[in-house]
Image 1 (cartoon, rainbow, N blue to C red):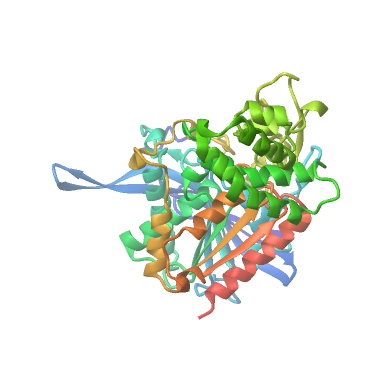
Image 2: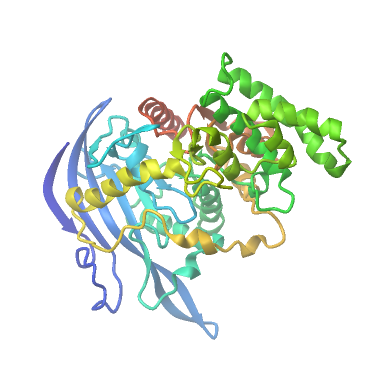
Length: 501
């Protein structure tokens, strides 16, 4: 990769970490130029990184009082250079964010889509420190310009001086701030006529659908496509915190079976064979047994427990003791207990060390532990050393926003944005959706996401605009070189097909 030392700034003073002297925040974007070798040849592109001020209309006694700065949202954007060095405004543009809520965009940015990616190694073979960045030959920049967004309190995004970050830590305000940033970007960069995509992972899929609906209903902005990676649009299908969490058990059970297969609990059987049996069992005997409650006889209970234990790799005794309802965090602790090991919630392929032989639950997710170091080091180095930012405040890979995230708009019912997806699919007959699933993902089990799509209230012609991709991976299909390439090529192809006029 070659870089030109042409770092400069757009509006504002370049990346000062100390904001004590700034009475009114202003946009700060540092610009650099680079090249990257891809599977389709060398690309020359411009990178911009920094923060954009988000403002809200303020009324006092029903009188317009101006636009008040509320937050400074961090972005890193890439535009392919045209022949004259200027961006091609007819190119697709993709806005990207991760989930959490409370996660920065570092994972998709340096994991699969950006022109540079972190070398995190393979599952159970993580790269040792010190870590390195490398060029990404399969970058989505081949097909689309890119804007990576860090929502409030993640990355370098912060409330303005005197503001309250927690005001943004909730479904509604999160949607408003991200939609406003996208509107601003498309207006200032003259991208309203470009093919446009939203790409989110995990809670980022909740955000993507909600933002897409707001962009249309509030601003009339239509999109070409949504990419939903490890989606969760209906929390009722996978929430173990409910008093009755039968649906979460049913949704997670095929993933339990997949993880058990990966760790050698189904010798001599293929993954497909195990999943087919698990899905049939979950839809039939298991669902029936859970629906019976205390009406289930002991004989019926132990018959179901035997099959559940065989599929999940847990002991019959444990399955019976938890009343046929193993919770996912405890499953991760229990599956390999005799080996003194745990498996990951984010990625069930990844093993960790059990901190206590009698622990009820593991003390951390080993799949997060395995990848946090490479990505954290990579983003801190990359934004300053390669993209020229001078910001030196902590880059929050994760924030604690999830601990007090507000869903007050859904009070008294499970969080679900499926109605918003239905709304935009009906309103836009050209909108296409790509849904990606990981078989070893216990954060957003594939069966729950499949069930969500199957129950959308849409006509056949709208359902035909969905495409699906399954990966023998966890929550992040890009962990592992072969699946990263497969995912990157699939997304690139989807963007190109969905952009065609």
